Image 1 (cartoon, rainbow, N blue to C red):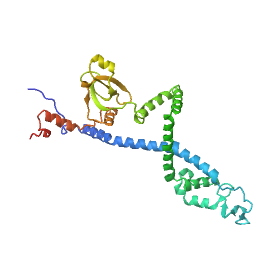
Image 2: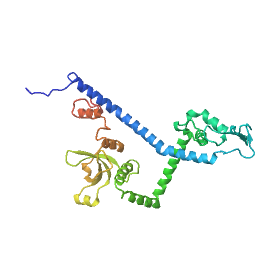
Image 3: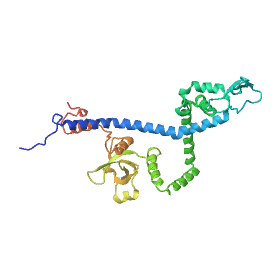
Image 4: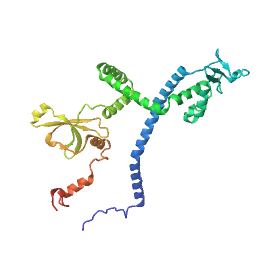
Length: 319
């Protein structure tokens, strides 16, 4: 009597194995959205810390320097608010000027009143201003540079800058300058390795691909019964076609999980199997090392069962 292998069912599975299985299943479900959220938060914080905040600070200081109305002492033609107390301030050209809590310079009273009334809308590092410069910086921030205005404006400037940079480097002079820059970077140890790796990824994801992938195929490579997924990029080499006496196609076989590198082979058209996949689905399959499969396995199993006669094939009209 033949000995059949024991099948481990849910009834005889150990509780510890079930617990571990469900924990890993939960991690696999939570990890992708969580990692995506963390990457987006990190990207936003990096942009705010290294791009938005320095730009805002520079523009704010420039506006303060251009628009600040500060007096070291009462100017000629002003009227003291209290002649017995010169430190109480003065009136000049219809505005009342007073001293802030720190410093001896006079600024318009409405600046201090406005900033004190809107303390909660200022960043923590700008709250409770004391000097004249602090009050003017807070006033410019609240009145002219709210985030609802600066963020869309920054995005507009970034898009315009990217457009003009792209137009510049698309020209011959821009390409020449860029080649010089890359030549300098390639001579710097460690930096050149990091730059080349980042450039490969960004070129593959963001740049216009030099290779125009026409369709997704599978070929037996590197030996028989081993199927590799690749992209048809064009016709085969003419001299090689003449030598072998049949039509060839050029197929690019990406490496997994970094599909920006790979192999280009010339293979007979008869040895190419077209796959019902889009380019993006094939790239996801390669990057995930086969974990993300764009084809529903139940459909494949159903088709195989129908071909084997195990269940009626509805497509053929058989009952």
